[in-house]
Amino acid sequence: MALQDDIYFISVAARMLGMHPQTLRKYERLGLVQPTRTVGSMRLYTRDELERLRVIKRLVDDAGINLAGVQRLLSIAEIVQRMRPLMSDEPLSARDTRRLSQEITELMRVLGLD
Image (cartoon, rainbow, N blue to C red):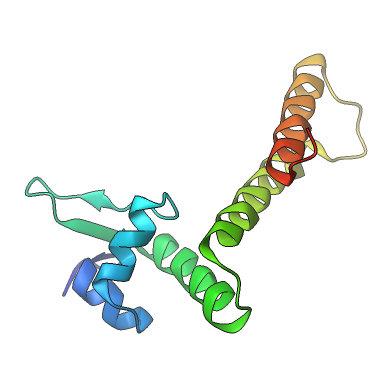
């Protein structure tokens, strides 16, 4: 049952994704998703989290990538997403230059190039 149009209990989310609720709990323990909680500690998943879980499912099931690889790929994707606004043709401010440098350092760490 959906609470609102965009928020789902774990049982509904699992059914929508064709996954077992225990798999969703495992992904949460690994930090791959972070569902919100009700006052009674029930997990609630948003549409964005469901889409993230669909990506994870494709990487694991279709591409055969293990969960450590999935974690690394998702970290890289998040870093690239944060860097994207900094990659314009206009000169960077000192603040943006520092931020870009930090993101590149983080990307190198995730890639194991540090």
